[in-house]
Length: 204
Image (cartoon, rainbow, N blue to C red):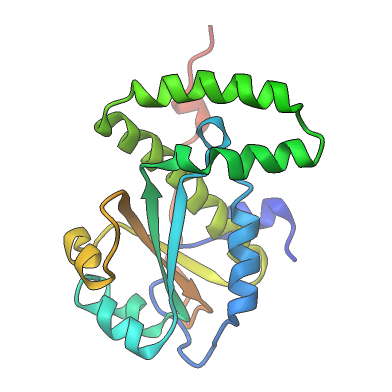
C-alpha cells in the first residue's frame, strides 16, 4: 500500500492499460467495499455499480462507451449508477447500526420518520442532484483506493447513458452517473498542473 499523500499527489487519469493484467473479482469487491466508506447524504449510500470485466460485457459496453481505448484495454469498466430510491435501504443501513450498538432502536425510528418526510418532499431533480454529488465523492474515493493498491483508473463522462440503460436493462430508478476504467497502466497518465489554493481562496 502506498502512503496517503503519495496516492493523492501521484494518481493520474490513465488512458492506456496493459490488457494482459487481470484483476480478480474478489479484489475488485474489496476495492468497492473500501470506496463505500465515502460520505453520503444521511449515509444513504446511493451508489450502485455494474462491473464489466468479460470480453462479452466489454463488447456490449463498447456500443455506448466513447472511450474505446480504455474500454478495450482496461481490466474492468465500472458502470456507476445512482439509486433514486436510496431511502429503500434505510432499514438495511440503520438496522445494522442498531445491531452494532451505534444507535438505539428508538433513535433509529425517530430518524426514520424525520428522513422519510424529508425524502418524500424532494422532487426527482433534487434527488438526482443528491446522487450525483454522492457518487462523485464515491468515484474519487474508489480511484484513490485503486491507486493505493497499485492500479490505475480513469473517470469518464463520455458515454451514451440511454444506450447503457438499454444494453444492460437498467431499472429506471437507477441513473447512470459515469464510467470508471480500472487496470494497470501501460503508459503513464499525462502530468497536469493545479492552481494554487492562495489564488483561489478568500478568508473571512
